[in-house]
Amino acid sequence: MAIPYVSIGPQQLPAIGQGTWHMGEGHVSRQQEVQALQHGLELGLKVIDSAEMYADGGAEEVVGEALKGRRDEAFLVSKCYPWNAGRDSAIRACEASLKRMATDHIDLYLLHWPGSIPLDETLEAFERLTTSGKIRRFGVSNFDIDELQTLHSLDGGQHCAVNQVLYHLASRGIEVELLPWMRQQHMPVMAYCPLAQAGAWGADPLHDPAVIEIAADLNISPAQLLLAWCIHAPGAQRDVMAIPKASHPAHVGDNAAALEIQLDDETLSRLERLYPLPPHKPPLDIV
Image 1 (tube, rainbow, N blue to C red):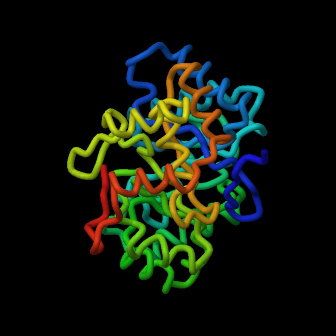
Image 2: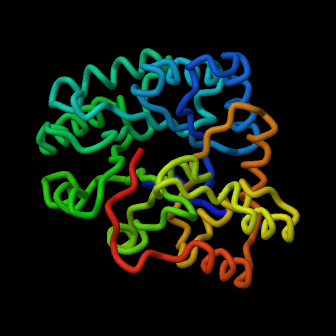
């Protein structure tokens, strides 16, 4: 069975990648975090997502260590703070990220969330970074539909490659307006917190007895069920990529195995009854 891919620019990438939020904070050993990322690469989880915010750059340092001698195996994503998104400050922020990750380019560089710096300044900086080869393409994170439409209306804004947002079974608000609009623009979603670690006002499908029962019926884990739902959600058009974080090789293996899980209509219907689409557009879920 062919695993699902998501296209970002000309590249087709597996629909599950690797997040690094909370890496570099000492919760587990640096060596274990490095090994987990490397194990993910070995299993085909090519996308590694980080940010200058994560552990104040510590997560990027973990990524840099994991990619020593194997940079070409990864599609590398990082993000800059909104206050570092000016025409010159974004250049400095990107260069600092490049240094921490010990690489000469970032495959996808994102504005972490909307801020007070005018978007045309950020676009100018991203264009300069692209022209110099320091980034291959750019995108945004935590943009709701109005913010994304504003970006799209600006010169160069049409080149925005992705929008990274919180999305999981219990937080489906993007399906009302944001996701349909992004699909019209052929812009994929990168879904953070796909295992429902946050958002949706405390809903916790990962530990919901009904979700656990459905997963048991399929002989998979609840986490695998949530990942499979995220990348094969109702109406999914192979344009949603999940980026769970895993610091243990066993968890990385479980995440990679979720790429091969197909959910039938009955399973999707059961999940829909548990966590239906909201009737109206809610505020964008953000952590």
